[in-house]
Image (cartoon, rainbow, N blue to C red; front, top):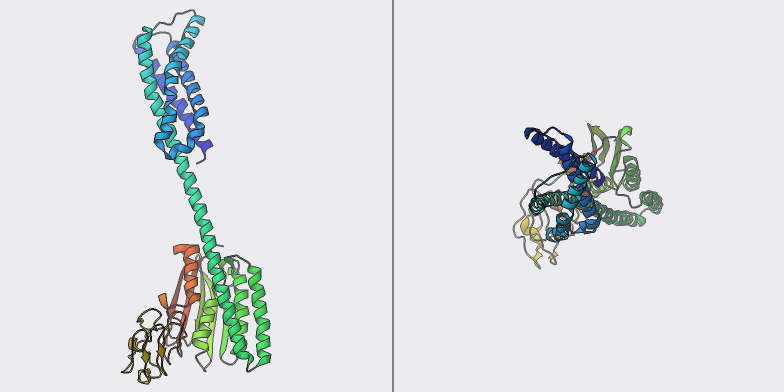
Length: 436
């Protein structure tokens, strides 16, 4: 509520208050057998005019202290300076107007002795003064609270913008690094295909530059980035992957976090396609349920870990089976050749080598290392054959970044989850509000 509207409501309340005071005075006058109704009206009208003038003067000269509402004692101290002004000014002004009106009406205004009148009126003015000062303080405090709330909301919005921009900028170099690494690995075996991939990468980077520093883009723009990356990767794995697109064209204007789908597709290539020799089918879809946009990326081969067990910082995740005997645990230790997990099984906690240790042939290294066949590796490491990135704390930078961005931009209004499909396959599903 704006201050102008508050002033309007306060003025109406002020008029109603004096209307009530006048009605009470008239009723009391009639009860005392009075017959000239104009007299109680003059009494209350002169009081109304005098007090209104004094209040307006007080507000005019104390408005500069409104910034002190956060320090009530100091604010009220500046208001108290005006209390003697009410004592000295109210009675002479109000009673002087009454004497003048009575004289014009050919009558005489009579009252008690001046000492008694001054004491009564000053006590009454003191009570009124503190009531009015308290009401004014309450209104100013309320508006100060609203202003502070608005300022905090703007500050929080600005912080969210900065956070989202930081997260987006964190993701883009990660994507570029992975793409260049892919091209570099292909350059040694097929220069023509590597050149074609460089052209595809240039198209993706051009689309990324078009996005600029936006943290949300229409779904159409996000799909442009995603199709560019998909073309880049299918060029490399032409004989091992197929991608089907199922996009509702009516949803293309819906806003989505920029580069939110590309890390999910990258996970499929990294943790499933690269680890398999058999063909992998990927489906990318976008549809709506009520006012919710549902984005899905799923494959037909990935396997999520059934259970997770970590030993130390950056340890590998166990995927359900026990390790062979003789494995070593601990920081700085070396896993012997006998600690190698069998094909298709996961290394147990004992076969995890901590940070700074060396893993021998067949053992599972710590954070950033490669797992043996069938195992699933934690954050930043490479997954095993047929596995996908884990959920929660074991997700890579792309999934972790996406969760943080969704939480910052939509809070509880958005969600992301990884689902295991039967008999094989993983579905990454992102839900976002879309009312358009």
